[in-house]
Image (cartoon, rainbow, N blue to C red; front, side):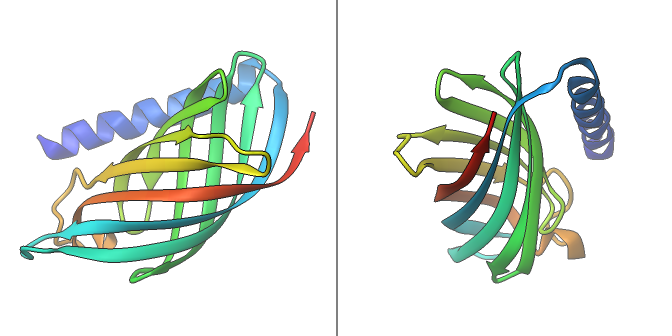
Length: 155
């Protein structure tokens, strides 16, 4: 059952990302550096495990306020990490759903408190597979908050 749900989510995700890019042109691109801190709830552990990451990424927004975003970087304890997602802008708020390939999770992320040089983000992540697989790094749930510094804006 979990595999069917996961496969359906992956198919929907890739259809949305490909159709969003084909139908509309990019209105803006923004590169960023992001620093996150959070906690992971690990399989077979009774306490949360702290973690942090520093990532570089890029956000593309089209004229319909559809977002396509990707990022990669370094993390503790997993050493490397990355995310890819699609979403929607609501004013200055960005809401994104996507996949973190390693450690494997699906996530929902939102921006808030826009500043002159960037904005805050918060994310909740869930592992839809067995939390004991090598790609999950043992996490069942990850909750984090971070700050994203804008490097440039292209219009």
